[in-house]
Length: 350
Image: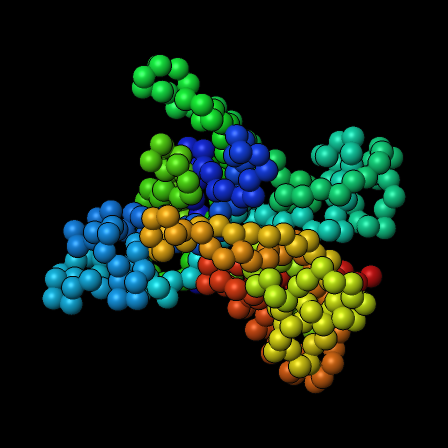
């Protein structure tokens, strides 16, 4: 697994949940699925055998595969096209940052006073009120990520005025002082080189989403220990299908059982005892379906920072194997696109 470090040259936009039709707000990270789609666009742009109207043998548009067994081996991207479906991507996020988790509280009067635990009732510095927050944290403080807003419209070619219903604002992310990173695993290993220009996210044809690669390093293996109770939190969103959850009333045990069936169906030595999470509905787009058919089926999203707590319910050896598997592989759907990545909260002992 490689860790690709980049810096943004222009603002980037990754669509989240649309709250208003005329205000588009970017999320503060780019999912691996969008990174994958952005690279697909860059690769197919240089493929002389690519025709947008054609599909692969499985009926998918815009898919990377070997299009001609005789001509493709002579292309310098042959190894890329041959293995692209097996590539794994993580979320693009600020380097060294972690998501804010539900137990984190911050001073309402001054966010530079750092984070406080759920046991604190007031700020340790000024005595002010505490509140929950969202976003990313680094070095014990809330990370400031700059936004860049532009207002756009379309011009009616007959009246030479703004076209009705086209005026909208795009709020993108632009923090050129930050280094961003994402995990990647694929072949050839030298695909990403320092100095490469990547176009990631939406509106790349208008100049958005230009990143320069500043480093390609081996990703450090995640730390984990059998420290009871085991607490894991989501470094990225997790995706699950809607049938696992409903709006029917349920007891605590029934609710935990639903979570186990949805995200932890194979656990034998670890038992889920507590969940702190937020669920949302997501749909998104799938450009492999072709024009006018790009909507995905709705799914449920577990927000980043969600906490899952486990207790031992079997042998310690089996529990260590299951813990390793959770942290290495993640949970939920589309784990090859960075969804469901877990990290352990290593508890401090007095």
